[in-house]
Each structure stands twice: as C-alpha cells, then as structure tokens.
Image 1 (cartoon, helix red, strand yellow):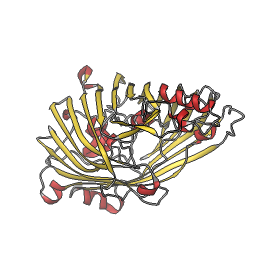
Image 2 (tube, rainbow, N blue to C red; image 1 turned 90 degrees about the vertical axis):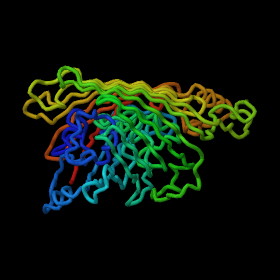
Image 3 (spheres, rainbow, N blue to C red; image 1 turned 45 degrees about the horizontal axis):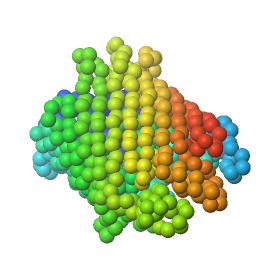
Image 4 (cartoon, rainbow, N blue to C red; image 1 turned 30 degrees about the vertical axis):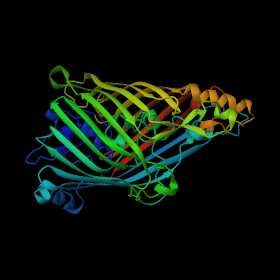
Amino acid sequence: MLSVGTALALCAATGAAAQTSLNPSVRVATPLNQINFGSTSVPPLPQPEALWPDPFGWNTWLRDRGVAFLLDNTNEFAGNIGTVTPGYGLRKGSSNAGQYGFENDTDWERLAGLTGFSTHAVFVGRYGIPASRMFGDNVAPSQEIYGAGGNVAVHFVYAYGEETLWHGRFDVAAGRIPFLNDFSSNPLYCNFMNNAFCGNPKASSDNTSHSSYPDSVWAIRFRVRPTVSTYFQTGVFFSQAGIYGVKQYRTGFKLNGADINGEAIPIEFGWEPIFNHGTLPGHYKIGYARDTVDHQDVYRDGYGDPWALTGLPRRADHGANAAWVLVDQMLHHFKGGAKDAGITFLGGFYYNDEKISMRSQQYQAGFLGRGFWAARPKDGIGINFAYIRESALAAKTQELQLLQGVLPGNLLNGAYGPQSYGMNLEVDYQIHVYRGMTFAPDFQYYFHPGGQRALRDTAMLGFKTHIELF
C-alpha cells in the first residue's frame, strides 16, 4: 500500500499495491519504529494514494476528526492462450472478475476521547469467475478476486473493535474477523493476481475453520510486541459450518452463532528487521494453528476403510493442524529512491493435514522490483512461482473412484484425474497510470493444472487494474 500523509510510515517499506481492506496485514508487517502514532494511541488510519483524495474537502474534515472512508475497485481479466486437454469437455476462453470495496476506519480516541480504541468495517460487491476453471484447474484460480461474495450488491466482510495500548506494544481486536486477515498474511502478495499468491498462500484456506476474506467469524485476537521489531499474536476464531455456502452466508449478515462448530487457535511469531542502516526491510514469520472442528476424511470411512469402495459416509476427523513460514526481504535498495524502491525476495511454505485437505503443502518463491526506472518510480515488476502438493490420500481416493467407474470431473475435489502436484508461474508489470490507478499486464503458466497430470500444461494472458477512488 503506497500511502501518503500520516500513514506513509506504515506502508512505504512494503511496496504493496494500494488496496482497500489491506490495512490489517499492513499493520502486522510494520515494526513499531515505522509507525507514527502522533498525538493518538491509535495507529494511523489508512490513506492510500487515491484518484479523488479530498472530494469537496470532506475527507480532510472527517480525518481531522478520526474518521476515514475508502472506496476502490479491483478488476482482473485473463484468457487462455495455450492448449486445452481434449476429451473432458474443457475449453479455451477468457473471463473477467472484480470487486468494489468500501471501508470505514474510525479513531474513537480522536472522535470521542476513548483512548486507544478504533473500529474497522468493510463491505464489498463481487462479480465474475476465474478463467482457469475452463481448462480444468481448481487449485490455483487465475483471478483471486472472485467467490464467496454471494452474488449480491453488498456483502458484509468484517467489522471489529480494536484497542491499542502503550504505543502499539499491546493490541486486542474482537468482533467479526477473518482468520487470514492477520495470520499467514502479507500485504506484498496482492501485487500478483493468481490466487496461489493473493491474498494469502492458497493452501491457508483449505481448512474451512481458517476463515478467509471476504467471510468472517466471531473472534478475538491478541498481539504483543516485546521489541520494536518482533511480535507475538494469537487468538480464538469460532468456526462456523457452511461459512462459504451461499445458503447461510450469501450477504455475510448472518451474525448469530447457531452454527458454530468449533474453534481455531493460531499462534504466530514475527521478526521485522531493517538492515543496512534502515534501507533493507524484512519480515520473517512462523506460525501454527490447531482447531477443534470435525472434518471429513478424504480417504477413510468410520471403520477406517476407503469410503470410495465401501460407499459409507466419510469419517469425521476431530481437529487438524496447519503450519507456515513466510519471508520477505529487500535485498537491494535503489539509492536515492523511495523507501520501497528496491528488489525484494518473497518466500513461503504452508502445511496442512493431508487427511482433511486438498492442498497438503505449498512452497513459493519470487521477487518484486519497484523504483528501478527513474522516469517511472512507482512502476513495479513481479515474478512468483508456486509448487502445490496435493494430498496423497485424496489421490488414492480418486484412483479408487476411477476404478469404480466415476467419470472424470466428478472425482473428489471435482478432479479429472488423480491429483499429485502442480506448479504456477506468474509475471506481471504494474504501470502507475495516474494517482490511485494501476494497470498490470499479467502472464501465468500452469504446469499440471489443478495438480493433474492428465491435463496439459497451458498459459494465460491478462491484466489486473486497481482504482482507489478515495
């Protein structure tokens, strides 16, 4: 999030693309010595570069009183320019997906004298589907900004209160919060378009108790910063059955807890050093999560036999584990450039229990460059590579289903053949068109789409646009 005004220190070192609702992960990835609290105990309100930064002067008037409103649009288009596997009813094609988002952040210390207290809320509207479905991928969607929006004009994403004490040393948030807002998150990831990278490593949302934007659950989250460059955070997120189903969560306004079916408890430790006299920021985080939800086993029935053979209901596995390691480090800073002008390395690993997951492991690595062209200091270029390992137990079930005569496309996970592993490569160039506007041509290549060797490798070409209106 390339920001201006009081929020500049929050985001300049990250090089993240400006985007409404990115503020939670930005705050996690910002050491205390980079936050300018000013006269308030509340961290600075988000203020990304915008097309219309102060319409009729009301934005300045509201912010002086501790109230911020943001409105943006993200649009992603992609089309298949490679081959499509014959015989499965798949096809070449293109599609568009997008989202308009509205955010409110309020500093209640400034507005009403409530020391350290702030509130945050986001509403969105989503449209479209990812084009990668057309050629059989169901693991790494080509356009991340789709799904779970209920196909309604207004979808409630989250709303929570936050108390910040001792200039950020202690922070607690409670309300409707997506699990992945703060945990295993990084504001750099949405420089890309493929869902393997943006907004979290895709394997992180395999476990349905790890609620993902734009859906939230009742939760409380605690964060402690023992030093300016370290933090520890944990919390309790009350998982709700069918959270991604249209029937109950079409608009996101189903706020009762009648379908709470367990809890997810994550812990994460982060180190946020700034090397080379404050010019090379880095973020290193390691995390673990355990939940108490009953998950459907991908291979065994209640007696321990393969359910694909017995036809009996799948076994309920109580609780599951997940773990992650995420790294980003600026390796080189362009002398004389802005704080985010440099070459940054991105790396990550995510683990899920294979008995309840489709994606059991994910590895990723890439680079971001910004400020390398003096004539266009806000342009950026990115390359990212992901390797996603599918559950070996799920593959066994798919093999048994084929032997039983189940047709491709109707196998577990909607697969066309046994899933083993797949890889994705993405390259994009972000063009800073105008204040608050970016246009990013995007190339993606799929090795074993959907982790299926039965499907041919293929390529996609498209673009991602973002407009921050105010």
